[in-house]
Length: 423
Ligand code: AMP
Image: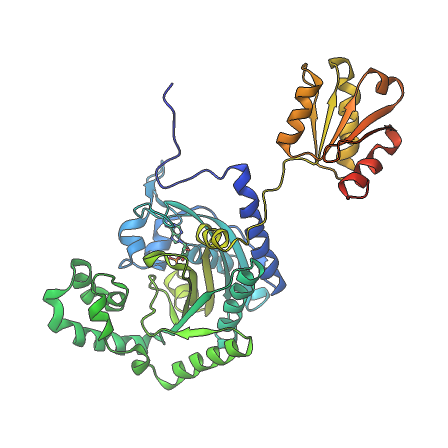
């Protein structure tokens, strides 16, 4: 039979790898919830229009990276390429902002982009993120950066280089767009195809271009186009970050790939990642997005971080915890006749919170005991004819190889003592 492989750009997370993933996801949940963020889950498929309106037609994502298909009713659906548009649609659609402002939500889940697969770039990847919806205060921009910062610290990841910039408000950007067009128009013939087109549709995206990086160096600075209020907002963010003990690097060229950002934008970079994939994630303020989606104007700010890339860094730095074994205890019968008694003891141990695997297969005891090592068990409980007759069990410490026969009533306590290291 031909083997069916996982689709291109996707991968399986097998049990040995899952522990690291869970460690990361638990850390993100714990840190986000310590700041009062609450979990949310939105659909993996969304109306294509959500991203066309929310992310913007001149972005790489919408232009060439979406997995889009029609449902049976002819509606265009897209596998979500990012989480902010969906989280905002869900929160405002349910009027959460009328109960409490700001609405603080966090999420984790799969996202999909049709990029050329390579290290750190997959068709299906995982993001954790938070959104803080309903207030425009710079203190909240600093708060979300701090959540991410504490999360990286919880994972033991050092060496994060936080890049921050301000895109200002719509008028600032209009001014800056004019300045960019003035700068790039005489150079138009030398630009790459994408940039030449974007010069007329979305000139800010020219700053993201890797091919025309030399030209980016000489481009006008965004800061020079910002008005007083935008500068004050950004200055307040920088001040709050400093007060929180967070090192921020101002990067005037940081514009981020999506259209919906305004004022503060940021990215977390790490040197162990290479080139275009050096970003662990990022985010910023997106005060204009709610209106683009047809909701009343609602200021908001948030971030998304790439789980696979963060795990790559954590592995390189050696901060990922060791693989957790499947079980602590193996309970086995000597012969099939003792299967029922062995199963009852396994139940008893699980109730006492020991992770317990049961082996009542019809094969030799020494082979069953070898299996104990493979599942990672440190204790074997052996149930033979004599044990059933005496309402007892043989408890073997697989590290010290010592063993004792104990009454069933003392089984859980004996096992707990060995696992606790004081046998
Ligand atoms: P973005 O929404 O583009 O800012 O992405 C945020 C983060 O998600 C990135 O910094 C990456 O860590 C991760 N990410 C984005 N696209 C991919 C991808 N195709 N494969 C793996 N991770 C990705």
